[in-house]
Length: 140
Image (cartoon, rainbow, N blue to C red):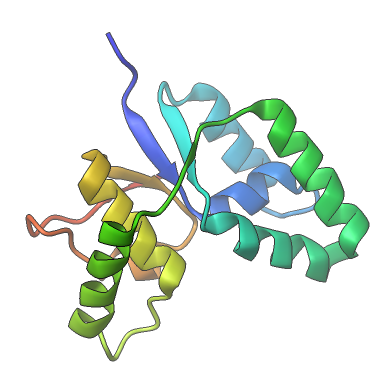
């Protein structure tokens, strides 16, 4: 039986790889105990690299990228069809603080039929609904 899939948001990925992050231990425990395939949307990498750069400069970004490459977690690209859906979502939620990454995760979840997202950003993912009207389940 295939493992359920979970899309990984920037906040979760940063906390997972940043030992100094206050949420690191909790996120790591979830990553190690939840029986699921964690999939990283490539679009989150720029945001996470920015967070690492802010925390410690390019050496920290480089270390993150090396660890991520060694982990070989699946990466998922955003397609042009996903971008059409992202645009729709941005028009649908104009007064919110949803960003490109959040909307891309929802578009990927719809296309890949994934209903869970690993994130520490409960605010944004408690606002946005998928095309079928449901919310993504938030891990943790």
